[in-house]
Image (tube, rainbow, N blue to C red):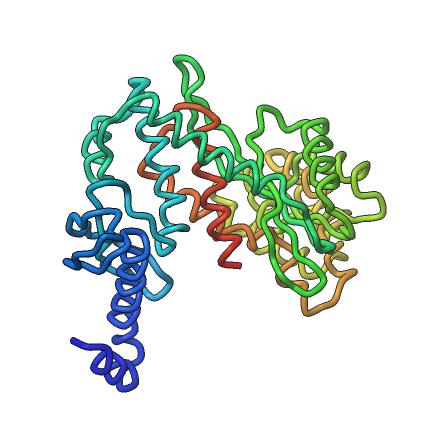
Amino acid sequence: MNIYDLITDYLNDEKNALIPLLTWFLNRVMEQEAFEQSGAQKYQRTEYRKALRNGYRNRTLTSRHGELELRKPQFREFPFETKVFDKYSRTEKAIENAIVESYIQGVSTRKVEKIITQLGVENISRSRVSRIAQELDEKVNEFLNKPIESEMKYLFVDATYFKIREGVRYLNKPMFIVAGVNEQGYREILGARIADSEDAMFWEDFFSELKERGLRGVELVVSDGHKGIQKAIQTSFIGSSWQMCHVHFIRTVLKKVPKKQHQQVTERLKEILEDASKIPELVHEMDVPGARKAADTIERFKDSLNNYQAFPEEHWKRIRTTNIMERINKELKRRSKVVGAFPNQEALMRLGVSILIDMNEEW
């Protein structure tokens, strides 16, 4: 099918014809790149040729319109390079690095050899792992140290937990991610760290690093109820408010009551989140055996449940929870699932931050 047929199909059926059109276009882009790198068209005899063609390798590219099945040219003398897969290959390399490093250290699953084969990884060696790691570390460090140029009125902090190997043990450790929303309403992922502890010193150091990179203008920080975050916000962002995420608040309270009461308590909690004047009434109701810990929790967070209401009402839905981070966490889990347990913290950071870079570019 030629380009004219593709365009006609696209005009007649935009939804179903866009993928073939994009596939044709990106394949043509790679053919042009192959011509520029080899110095000659396919089958062309010329003294300027620098490499011989060696067929194609089928590659899948995930786009927001669906999966594209592309044909990537190959050379005999040196690897073919393309801008088409830049973003895709960054995350793919991070996944490859984590899996192969696990394989070398003997901590991989039984499926790892099959996964390595599917990735097309050949000549597995420590030196290859080291080269990939060095390349990824440069991109990770560049992203985590880039200047924060805009003022960030709202700050969101949330965590996703991963299994990491330490010695002979596997530990669940949180990767904390900080995102901001500037005065123009644009979101930006600002930083990420794996936490060995969650005390105030950890957070003060993390926030201090963000401020050194240019973080300023923070008026509201939204997170779960870790005491370390609360304390660090008071010293790091003087004059700002802390908002307890409503979703985390409900989960925290429900942990303190019997499961059979969850539905009833959830409904009552939603009432006080809509009308703070009902908080004393609910605390009094729950000041009974079996629910006193839940009452204490409500009492502890009552002054941090409605700080979002000091800001424009059209922002309320977005700034009373950390739901803005939900898609980030889901994507991190989805893309890292193939790895399973990470061989070390560095491997997690390479993959995690590579995914964050992709998402930040999309935002």
